[in-house]
Structures are given as C-alpha cells and as structure tokens.
Image 1 (spheres, rainbow, N blue to C red):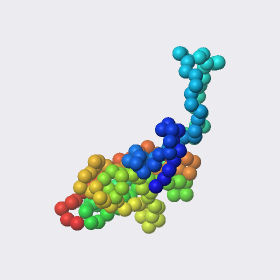
Image 2 (image 1 turned 180 degrees about the horizontal axis):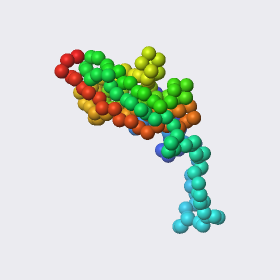
Image 3 (image 1 turned 60 degrees about the vertical axis):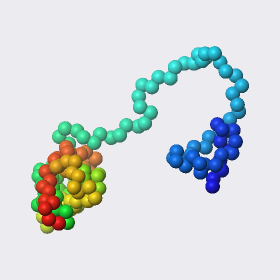
Image 4 (image 1 turned 120 degrees about the horizontal axis):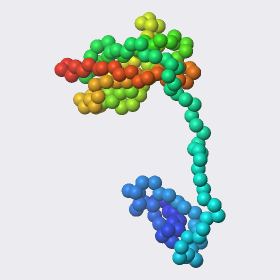
Length: 168
C-alpha cells in the first residue's frame, strides 16, 4: 500500500483507495492561501504568441517531389487462414527509398506496417494476414505510401483487398 502526502486533503492518504482513478498525481506542498483578491490584478504586459514554440518539422510532401506509386495490388484474396501478398512498384530504385508502408484496418493489427524490397519480383512486398478483427472489416482498401531518402513522401495509394471467408 502506497502512502502519499496530499496537500489538497491535508493528510496522508492511501493511494490504494483511489486506484480506479488512474495515475495519482503528487503535487508539492504549498502554504495555505492567506490573501484572496476581489478581482485579479493587472498583468504587466500581455503574452502574445506570434509563432509556434515548437520548431517546425521539415516538409514531407511537395508537388513533384518524393516517390510515386506506379502499381500496387494484392496477389489474391485474403482468407481466414492464409495471408496474401501485397506488391508495390515505385518510380524510384530501392537505393533512393527510405521506407514503404501500408495502413490497414481490421487485419492483424489496426495500424501501419513496412514492406520489404523483393529483388526476385522487382517490387516491394508484404504479407497481409487476417487478424483478430478479420470478420469486422471497416474498409475494403489498404493504403500504401512511400518515403524517399530525401524525406519526401508519396501520395496515399488505395489498394482494393479481396476477402474470401468461405474457407480457412
């Protein structure tokens, strides 16, 4: 059982009874407020932000820059027991590509996954497998994108996925 010093309550409190609330924040003790103003005082000068405080990211997309997806297709339908290959051809050689990814929903995980370059087929490939949400497909497409070593990205390219759940 953890014991914390909670200034808001003014006594030692067991965090176990508050576990359902999530993380327990411990604030440093402060003196009790002794003066309450009727209205706030005037600020010396207003704070005005004219730009972001965080440094800007380098551009990732610009017209005419970055790789282009020339062709993207599934080799066959995805079944409950067997993944299907996704094959992607780009307009740049693999030496100029930083990564090729695909987004999906309802497959093995909802997220994005990398493709690997296959020298034999001369394209980027990945196995698309059904997962725990295989019978709940939110989308009939997966989306492919590529990023060059210069940091510029392609457009998202939709790839229609065929499903065959009649057999494993």
